[in-house]
Amino acid sequence: MSGFGIYIHWPYCARICPYCDFNVYRARGQDHAPLIDAICADITEHGRRFGRRAAESVFFGGGTPSLLSGAEIARILDAARRAFELTPDCEITLECNPEDATRFAEHAAAGINRFSIGAQAFDDDALQQLGRAHDAERARAAVDAAAATGQRVSLDLIYAREGQSLERWRTELSEALTLPIEHLSLYQLTIEPGTAFARRATRGTLITPGNDEAAAFYEATQAICDAAGFPAYEISNHARGREARARHNLIYWRGGDWIGIGPGAHGRITHEGQGIATEGQARAADYIDAVAEHGVGWLEEAALTGEERADEALLMGLRIDEGVARADIEALRGAPLNDRAIAWLAEQGLLEADGGRLKLTRAGRVLANSIVAELVR
Image (cartoon, rainbow, N blue to C red; front, side, top):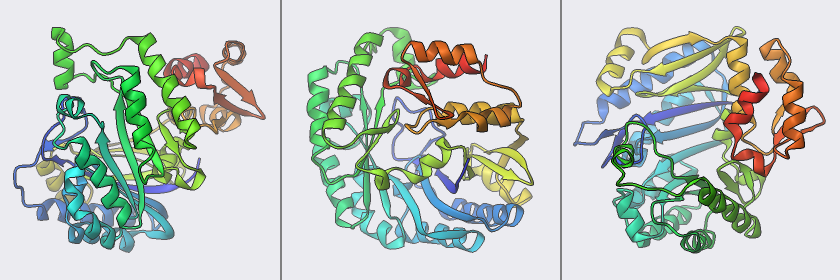
């Protein structure tokens, strides 16, 4: 259990993608200043309440935080530096849409040192299906623009899409791996409740690959990335070497602490020995009002039990290649994990129990949630 980071949620998007279930709203020319004021005040109050901790990462997520100007990002980072100590090698990530590439240089000048570009596909028909505003050429140009700043570049892609063949995915992924990137986040399309895609799936007008076909996509993804020197260090994430791994996400996966700032943002913080879960007000206006009234934008905060913390740590930690220390999980739970389940899962080739650590095999990674349920039963 290690690490501390700052997550900042910018909730606005130029358009809402039909697969997205995040806390996002359509940007309609809003004045950014009131929300940025609230975000800065929220950061300040978190620092006052929880102490001036050393943050090894700041992550601007969303939504589309690349809609922010360099000056707006710099103001938020100044607030973070006043409230917390940003380590000399602090990773500062900005989630970006390709159509915002003209701002990348000013983003880098403001302090962004890692660009996470939501290309999602390199197929123009697929990009239209996914509701994206860019085409494949613009996505490639955005990667080049980010790389030209001299900062680190990560790329997001979605596979197992409607109508996508395995051969076309191999071509897309192979092309992506030739670009000037050091990290890939590769997600199988999932149909989330409440999204436009979910409504289409219910009507039968959206049909995605079945389980066996999706497994073939996953296996092909692993093989192609391995051959290109981008092995998976997490179920959906691949990096060209250890230094290229996403430091902020590793805080989540390793059970570290982070504060969640902005509308709908979630946080996990340990204070005076107690784990605390926080959730921000979802709507920007409610969040701004909450910060004005209480100093923080929380909808709620809740004390986490040892069992809750253990189950979260197990679920997240098994996603990464290093796995989790069994003793740490059992100490949090105050109870042992299921020995019979561990032995059975190992016999099935889904789990490794080695040197006191539990690790999923490649076959086990696609069943992570079910495996965790067996371990804590």
